[in-house]
Image (cartoon, rainbow, N blue to C red; front, side, top):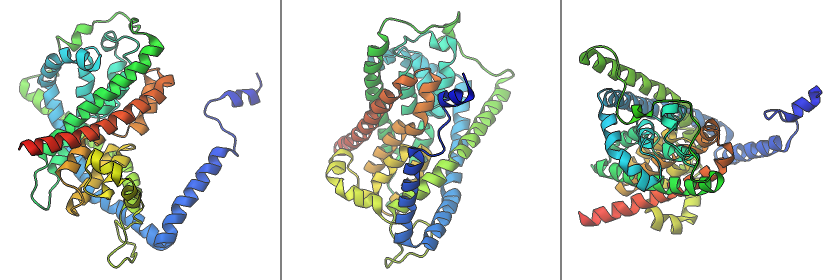
Length: 395
């Protein structure tokens, strides 16, 4: 085989001139051309930089602080057996609800306390993998993603200050219930696809391993209870710092553009190049879709559509949009419940599903995973809205 044939067969090599380059160039020119014409080139660039700077100071560091506290809490809950006890209690529910083995609840807890890819570490472990049939393993991507960054998202929503003094504890908890409903829909749909592909009988191939570790025993740090307490708390906090740093690109890049497509000009309709100015494109689209969005999600404003759209790519970026919507009176308790459900359930799945399915060795099922999870996320938002309405009527 000559070098030319080798190059043609290499999956990561493309021709210099390709349709992909043309499409990207056109899309890039259309986006910046549209923003530049509406705002003026200088104002567009100034707004872009000012918005990113303010997001870094006002949002990212706040998310990082919450991530450190949440990481410390999760470290302590894991070290002193609370997570293991929850796992023991919830394991019997997994089969009837999700059609997954009881051990999969460990994946839920791991991703809720950290982020989507935490499920992959478990899936690589032979002791964990031995519980799963072949058709069940790909669904770990869906159930893991459904709870990614759950603790941080919930903590962030609860901590948002409402100008009316409204508490967002109940909406955030309702959002968690919505995410659970969305996860069931996503996993069950995915299992229908995988069962057709792999059948329902064959177990995953594993090396000789001891699987009782996940149900009857847990690992702890060496040393006294006091030293374990300090180590678990500080190590968990360090994990929170890493997660806080990891969300910076998503928040600054995605949020900046979403805000510029969501917000309008300064007072008087004049662009000044200040932070948080924009061209109001997403609200215009939201207004056209309000006849669907209102009954399904109960959004207070057409601008609220920006949060679930952003959560498709990055949950950290999506929750960064919420405080300003609340502060401007464009989002209330119902919206926070829907945001929590959809940000948790989707939690940037478009940016992680492909890599996660590839890591599980199930790349050919990636499209099915994305379809299932799209439907699951929509069901999460709808469920949160109607649960909030029902509980508001009750009291």
